[in-house]
Amino acid sequence: MKTIYFAGGCFWGTQKYFDQFDGVIRTEVGYANGPDDAPSYQDVCANSGHAETVLVEFDESVISPEKLIYYYFLVIDPTSVNRQGHDVGIQYRTGIYYSDPDMLDAIRRAYDKEEELIGEPLAVELKPLANFFTAEEYHQKYLDKNPAGYCHIPAEFFTLNKDK
Image (tube, rainbow, N blue to C red; front, side, top):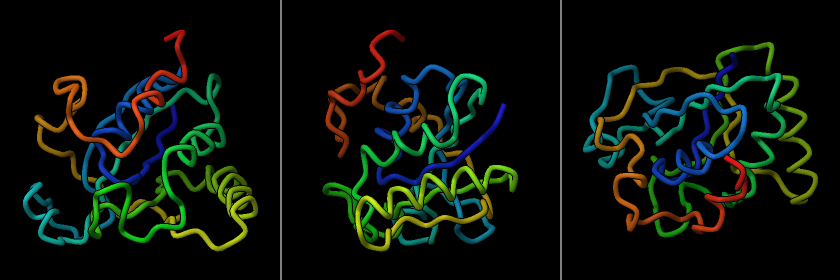
């Protein structure tokens, strides 16, 4: 199993989105790449410096990191700084974070391909994971528990992989 971390605006929708894909074993929402102190949701909303992030554990024999990154770019605005949809603030920045340096070449290829398609530098951070703190339980699988909850990702994107 491999793990990659996606900051894609509000983590509720990002988690629900990645949960649908074959090869994704587990997702968890949390706060990443901020100060080393474990924040609360209130801290993050008060500009602690952490990004709302989804840990995606996957089986590389079923789905590649490049494919996950392709899917990621389908649901974010990669040129927006600290904003996705109606959510604004540093915690809504976009980023691809990795803890396994062996994945960097694959991540970089997918990132560079998107940058070439867009034709301008991306506002998506591409960095090693500095830290990840699991979010409070009520945030885990939030849109499954609260189907009417807000999300910047259009609902039709939650069923791209209809076989699952």
